[in-house]
Image (cartoon, rainbow, N blue to C red; front, side, top):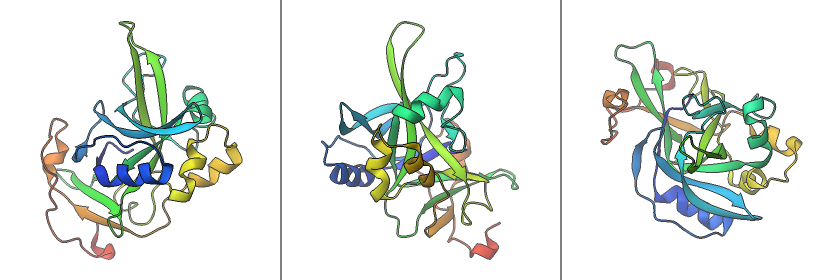
Length: 221
């Protein structure tokens, strides 16, 4: 599960340049939480565009919004099947957070690409009518098995997509055989840093500070 991530204009600007679409104003968010609005890239009328959507998709049974989906079953599971087929999106991020459950309090960790370059997470988006009759749109993140950097902390991580896969992922006509190979643990190098435990509070909206230099991989956990 991925319950928090960070983003800034860097990732959006790279996405805009690669997709050749219009830019939008973006603030720096170190602690993106579900139910907040964030930039995503979608394809509408055969053209990619970047816009703001709410993190969370309302399921048909009117329960809590869904913020993640397992990539292994998204193409076949009833609630996600049509979204996977026609409504895929790209979610720009600078980093994501996972929690080390073996510590008390739980220790949050920040995971980023090795050179701190922006990342893009594979997502799905949905359009629905709320109980009050209002139109709403939201997105969720796809997850996969953790790679060796994330695995000591958590068994899942977001699906990260390389730039040469962005248009393929957005294109609603892309066949399943072109999409499935993209749903894998990130194969490249990553960094991992422990950050302030203030992030453990769902209401926390302050800075996410690194609490120490990163230990070696052997000392991580």
